[in-house]
Length: 232
Image (cartoon, rainbow, N blue to C red; front, side, top):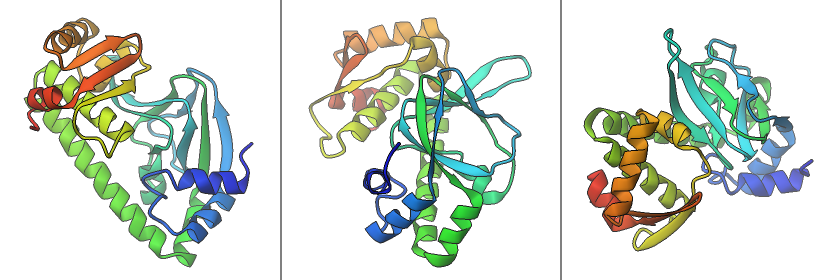
């Protein structure tokens, strides 16, 4: 169980709550409750009412939808420090996707009534949420662009670039090593491709020197990936 002070410190490392004043983070920490989920457990389903938002403390959560034909499309994986479930909580609508624990997951949960209290007493929370949602829209636009316009190796290059930059935001050049602790099937869901095609694309990226694989550890050559991703 995390203490309130530990939660406050953790919030400071996240993109949503980090820009807020420490006093506000301390107040938010007092409104949060900790919940754990087992691997494979459904956190919420598409169409469920959105009564709370979540912040991942540990583990990974897959955000996905299932087509009527049974095909799964994964939008993202939420890992440590990531927020999910905020859309339905904010607009009062239903959940737009399924959230499933990929492995053992611990989250901090903020209920809608608690969030409304924060907005009423701390207007700067609303400013931070707006900036956060604008970032979400930009990310979604880039993901749609990648799927629509780029071959699989380009999509993978963009995924590795984003992961590397998140891991080392101050190091945009050279080699950055990241841990990609997901199966090729999970990776295929994220880039909108089949597992065999992802396997072939990974081999192409490695042959070109854009990545070096060692188990779950991927060493990324930022310049090579940018050239393949079309962002150089």
